[in-house]
Length: 288
Image (cartoon, rainbow, N blue to C red):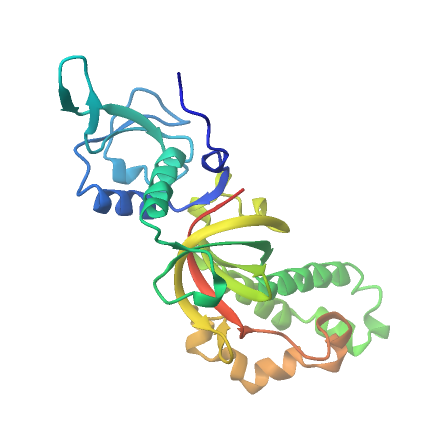
């Protein structure tokens, strides 16, 4: 008779960093005796180097993974045997999570988080507010430009700014820079705390980041920054704009603090940081 199903194991990851999962399992198991790609959604009966398949559209891949032997009782005597089992990347994630649970390595108490902790947190996910605002502004500018010719002789200061080619190029450059290389921050709001999650589009289900916005999900990951009472995390970090200190440049501030955009952006201007209390977690998985 099979064991009763543990519903906590039947999660649906919509973000899964399979490279981290494989690396950590290999560390725990002291290496894999064998990793064989049996099947992917694109091809069958093809064996390849596993590294080529890790993290690249492989949420539905099947792997034959050589793990540690299991101790089983026989009729005559106990014996140690090696079992070859077929895994998906999701089942390997569940094994990693179970190993962490067994050794009580997952911290779920926000008040005791420390740098380097494995943590599980649940909250509402939203897109990077800076990208969201800039994208909406870009759409508004495109709409405004449809009528720019008819209203050219009677344009307000706001209309002139919205149709300005240089301003349009600046907005486009900012959006592209904030998503360079498929990297994008997602913000989680949980129990009065904001969590910055640096993500990579390669690890999303169907390579689609929009799958997780405006939903309540669990995140398993490692804490890398903590600001409880003071401090901030820049949304421009690790971009060329951070090196240029764009948010501190007078020209940048003047453009986005222009009263003509106050109705759209707000009187506080554009926000480029998330202030304390805030932490940053490198996500291993985002799931329900």
